[in-house]
Length: 190
Image (tube, rainbow, N blue to C red; front, side, top):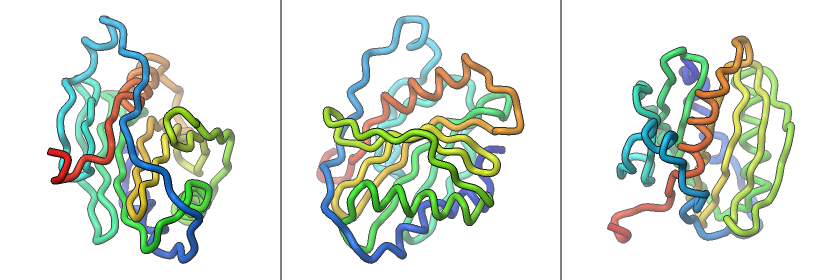
């Protein structure tokens, strides 16, 4: 499975961040609407209160057990092959931090849990107010939309196992689900 005990600790690193440089407002990820064929393969948008997001997991993908600590909640859906996943991590921060510092912590924790963390690409998306990056860990490649809002943040991702062949259709579905996830939902928003 893509998410194990080690991967569930991924957002815990953020607890140790002690210095910040501002934040951006959490928001919907307004990607282009999925085509009819793609939409048929995604579930309806559903509020997941655990991760404070509207999620759209691909149909037939199995939800993994919810991983939860005092500082993070992580829900992942696994493709039938077990090689691809769509996940949402919601984490709390001790102080408001910027995206670059949150990315640094993400990579540090990835290296600690997987033995390797290589940032492949990184790009600030001004329109969506998020940091988008791809990173290789010792086990997984993750394609992440990182959103930080004050003392909370989200890492919404499409992930693949590096030791298996990538299923292009599964990865495409995971990326579409990632890009149609709406984060920042809380009691005041309902």
